[in-house]
Length: 393
Figure (cartoon, rainbow, N blue to C red):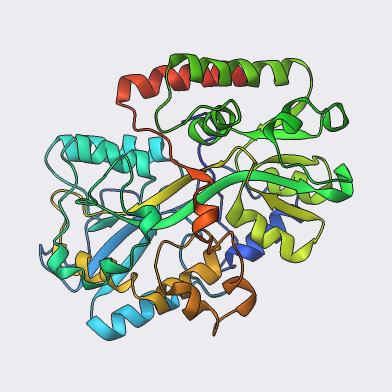
């Protein structure tokens, strides 16, 4: 992970119970000062209050702004879950960076203590690391009746090809965001982004290794799910060339929202979920899957080894695969929804969102989305080092 951290690395302290869209709006107005590292949360390692191995209270470790949330901080879907099951869920928004979170939980998992969370939602590649380290439990499919609703496009990811250990939580699609008030045109190719003289100094790329190098590899005709050293090196050289030529204004996490909204940049690599929200307030802001294809990451639902309550964990995972519940979450998060039937359910919540192809892409759109291959720890570190160097870090 780069020094910035991650796409949703937000400082939410002092923001009360603002919705995700309100945070994005405020960040755009505030010039990105809200989109900073370090969300204040309860530290990892604090056990559920009753301390029992089978309880009526569990912890779910996830990202900030990744579940439906009211202005007062209430999470309606979890309220419904608690009313139905009697199980209280503490939503612990502690994953601000996959690597930083891993550094916190690694000593506990290696020491055999386990972590207090019964459900975790890291990004796919980190989920793959948990699987390879034998830190993830196999899911009991007999307790997941709604797992049948997993969309075909999410059923065989490289990190967990038979979905023995995980289900998708949210899909995060990377593409090109454009402010046409600045560019005066659509920008649909990575080549334009990196070389068009009209965009010089008005472009930003992401500080995320997989999202940025994966998008550039696709533009070069390589598959980020099965690339070789030459493919990766070409992407690195493309980044260095664009940086040294002055084509790039800077590298960002999702703090590109401010620059894009304010017109400081005209085009950038971005996550579709953010742009869905920004475009509601500024029709000049658009999102395009590059002609060469876009990178699709996912956050997952997993049960870590030694989870305090696996029964309750399965009930929670199954609950979020009900189409109506998945639609409720998608209406807030605006990421790619992995649950079949959620689009129909969304029609009664927000018909406009139900028709949004960035939340509910059709089969043809899904063919334009590619995943990034799993890497072991050594390869990941080597690739990250080369990427950071290309960014000038």
